[in-house]
Structure formats: structure tokens, C-alpha cells
Length: 83
Image (cartoon, rainbow, N blue to C red; front, side, top):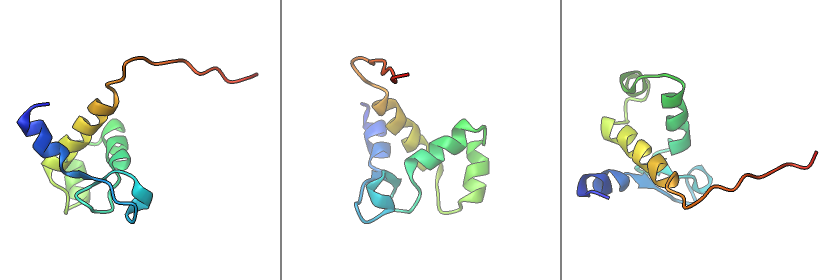
């Protein structure tokens, strides 16, 4: 991971007393998953920043880096539900 990515990644915090321990941005009550869902829904970064004025562009970049790290798995095993 590059130094820039490491700095951004530090914006992701996990505190068992905030949002039930889910990863959040800078200790604020914005779970990373919620911000990723907003981005995936088609909202632009500017729209998100306009709606959540205490967030910064770097926070959204940190969310994407976090998601990319989670996607770095060695293998994916298909789980089959019993019919």
C-alpha cells in the first residue's frame, strides 16, 4: 500500500462504542458501509459531501481503499443454501 493510501486508510476507525464497532470515518457516526452504499447508488462525491458537511473528499477515498482491501481475498468459496 502506498504512503498516500496508508494515510487515507487511517481515517477509518473502529471503536466498539461507536456504531456497534462498525468501521466509521474519523470516529464520526458515519459507517463506511453506508458511504459505500451511497456511492454505489450513483450519488456523486460532491452530492455526498453536500449532504454530510463534516465529511471530506479524503474520507470518501478512504472508504474506497477500505473496500479494495476487503476485496483482496485469496479465494472465494461459493456457499450453497439448502433447498
